[in-house]
Image (cartoon, rainbow, N blue to C red):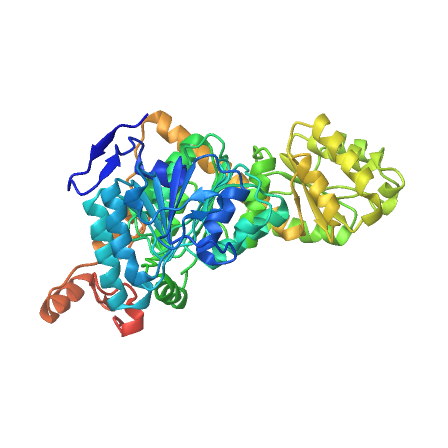
Length: 558
């Protein structure tokens, strides 16, 4: 039992503060206070209570609102200081002007972590940023970690801790091996909903909002440690904690957990849009790319690409090489997949004579026994033809993974499900099904068997390429770690300005030739350096305040 003590101000009795880490209190809370709760569960400030009750949260729940005596069968307190014990997490759902007072009250009560749903802070301009900073200072003074403001909150589906008002909480939300962190609330919710539609279980969903304190990297770094999580995914608009992101990515690599992110702000216009949306610095995209390559972060083009990769990573062993065997019921699809495979760095190897002979014994005379293999529509009459063809291709020493393309087949779901179940049991190398215009029950049936089934030819090849690349990057990284070799770390994303001389030195160290350069503090010095280098030269402005030089005329050639 917790003992009663006085807080540092001596203003009211509280129970002793939990000894758990503040991020654990945020992501895996054992007790939650809902400040500003509504008894109307259709309202945004009523949804947290609704979700906690519906999702089977087993921790203690403390509704806080002076308007009510009881909410959802739980005693409702007029203020957090009246609870009599310290909630590990406070969820604050009040108007922006009331947030500082509630943060102060939660801090005095000894709360370790708080989620602030309220908007109207840093994303609204200078006045909002000042108000936001006041909230941050109050939280820091009390040693409390703050998620938000302007956040949809956090979900730990394993524990039923739905500290959120997102619509995602309204549907079936079975926990699964994917941890998802997003800097966008609405778009992140859409991604979560798409994941659910695919049958992908999210163990965690965390929206970091304005990231005044708790960052994307903080959440990622804690979620990666959960043994129930095997794959991490994220939507990023701008890195605010570069070193923290590097640490989390490194840890994911160490633990063999793929980290798949969609990072926007690749262009100048995209970076401006990201900044206006969240107030975050999008940073130099090339720097983020460097970090991704160094630490094996898989960069997805968009949400569907991300989920394809996540889908495959949670169901399929990583291919141990670049050789792809393609088996289709359409010659055209085989050509398309072959083209795409080579475009993304995979190989479509010629099959051995033994494999070709084996295929010829399986296929009809009008089938194609090369790579790609065309089993034709004849396999509908003899499903073993498909299974035996895939097995023959996977047995080829030059093939490391198979991509199996199908279309429609509404009337053959049970037959195909059984075929792929047997195939999974009888093969060791991985395979992925590309099922175009598939019936939903077919996709669900394969997922229940732990078989990855994607909806398009090129997306299937892209997902394979991503995991092949990740596996190769991890092997190389582990070899370097084992040798004790230390590569010079790249500047962390979000670190801001990196001097040209620094980046040039890094390139030279990596064996990349660069042009001669010099830093001038005046026009006369610039002329002197140019004469020493030899004309023509490029002149670029060098300033920590100007990251996009061409947009302000900061580059001259001649």
